[in-house]
Length: 267
Ligand code: DGL
Image 1: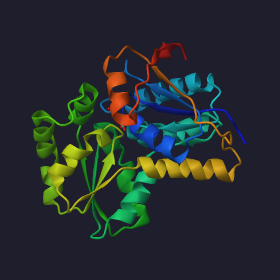
Image 2: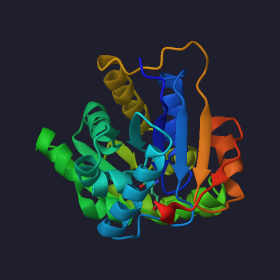
Image 3: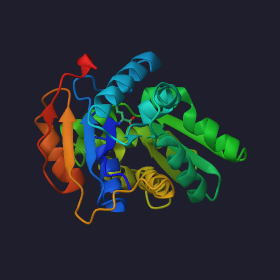
């Protein structure tokens, strides 16, 4: 048994979609969340910058005595996970491998679409892992950078969101994919809009649930679960003021949490 919290981070509010699944799978675990709102978006940054930011965040989370870390960000998972695992000794989980496993389970016609930030698409992480597992699968990737701004702005259902989705997703629909991986943790907040755009024939794959399952398995197998009976505490930190955070927390977690602002550059 290990009652220390789990650290979770993202560039902003996207990681809350992962927190939601972790809260469901591991209701007794304490969670410390960090959203790097001062330096968002990560998706347009270089691998080096994303890795430097991610290392600082891990160092910050270590001051909160976390027992494990979930990188609830595809951009950081696909660009920085290996470096972070070399640099730090605690267990660190990314969202890409669980997303790949879900995609392999989902596709029947072996045509898979991946949407994510420019940095995630550029990393080729999804494509490589899917093709390694099944070389017959064809992967079609598309960077959809504006989706992150729409989510952070709370514009997930309006006409602009729908037009943006139509523009971005047109070519993937034309490729005849049957599964579409939401390869950015912000995108599940646009699930309805994306679903309406692609139609029922294309299954949306959200890596969050599989990520939470993987963490649960790991903690259980290594006797690291928090076995107290009470529901876990959740604490939120951000690197800059954001009036949208509480609103988006409410949308993602059905509860409003007030985040504390910290200076991440100190770490
Ligand atoms: N939510 C993040 C991801 O999953 C990144 C969004 C961004 O900062 O560009 O990739």
